[in-house]
Length: 601
Ligand SMILES: Cc1cc2nc3c(=O)[nH]c(=O)nc-3n(C[C@H](O)[C@H](O)[C@H](O)COP(=O)(O)OP(=O)(O)OC[C@H]3O[C@@H](n4cnc5c(N)ncnc54)[C@H](O)[C@@H]3O)c2cc1C
Image (cartoon, rainbow, N blue to C red; front, side):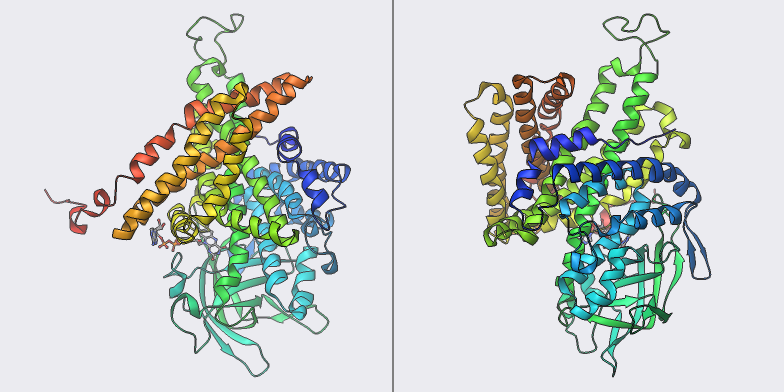
């Protein structure tokens, strides 16, 4: 049976030893309570909840899925009870403001708990995950009254939230959305239209659902500049702030899909539903970016979650499964055959998963510490964190979900044919993981955002913010023979990042299609370089610990060995990405549309 154990040792390594999270909290206004004791206690309790309550429900969710009956959605057995425990444990309020009933702890601490929840049971974790995005949006753009009415119930977990963007004819291109918002005499709006693919749009886990909906006002300009944002509750709310009569929004059906069966993906019909404008008219997409950026980091977490889950289960299997002898002679002569972990190719697969899981953990928790700074840092810290986040969000979202899928796939491969059989859970991990590269903006769309909006449109300013930091790190360690192999490669790639950007920028001046043609290779190249930076930092920390003397020699040595594996076996992929991205748009655009297929003999 597949199992999940919270990787507390590795979380501690990344946050305390590499990223210095306590140094960060010491400087962060409002983070005084996040002391080492408090953080450890939260992590231990979170680990228990993830391991004991959520992990056993992961397979149940996949097998039972959600059921739909005349507008009512029933979640798989145990999901509702687990949510009750989550609420009673105070988990929804962890990193939300105290004035709304929250515990006011840093976002980055919330993300550590989210990692454990996500890995134990992604489908379940999406319900509170979407609420978190809804809370952030109301916190940042809502009026005081809206905060009072909706935020306190979301923070307590009594109500959950959703994000309603997609319509049947538009997913990526939200400028085409048609849902209407008609102003009413009482200051509210009547919202009409159909949204599809709405995660957690309807379910039985909470008393009320607060939909955050994109719609158009009657006189709105066409395209993305004419979209506004609305709060639309499933049940209207009375003057006392309690749930009242049913609003005119209902679930029309749920999707039958490849994975994440435990999470309801809903068609939501808004039929003159009462809604309330949030943020300024026609600026809805800007406000929605608060939700989308949180959701993008959340989806990056999904990549890490499936990598970690694959790694844990495939390592256990590889130590246990006996097949063939090592090429150099028997390693376990007392057994009928050697465990498959002796074979180099199995190790290649395990180390790939380890490099992506542990490297991804460093990348994500670094990003979530930046999120803390965007909210609570000084003016300069905010500016810097915002710029770094604007560059790293598309990279984390797309790169970590692509590598997450690769890791999930390698995890299955380690099981041989048994990986294809449901009881081992590896095929569920692959199926559940696949959506991460699609929703919250596909890999292609993140890549355009990175290269087009974030890098070229800022004339490389956001990129330089990051590459300068990497350069500084390389300079600090350049003369040190112990780190030569990592630092030389990282430094070279870091400058190459600037060079290829210039080259694409020049080509794009002649032909804009060059941006789209280069973008996914550019994003993957960027992801490998960012991950190389974190692996170099982890290697420096591990080596230093080993030299200082430690009784965890195995742990730190494995870090160095994984860093070496990453640099020698994964990082060379950057060369292929450079060649492909600079090969130009012609090899993609030359073919006539009619010549893609010739089916008749
Ligand atoms: C299980 C599930 C849950 C979801 N949850 C939510 C949710 O909670 N809320 C919500 O609002 N939505 C949700 N979605 C919708 C999801 O975000 C969209 O499906 C996604 O953004 C892609 O939109 P689309 O499906 O319309 O694809 P399209 O936009 O039609 O794209 C099709 C293909 O064309 C590519 N493409 C499109 N435009 C370009 C371009 N300019 N350049 C290059 N390539 C391009 C895309 O990358 C993609 O490969 C969910 C979807 C699923 C399947």
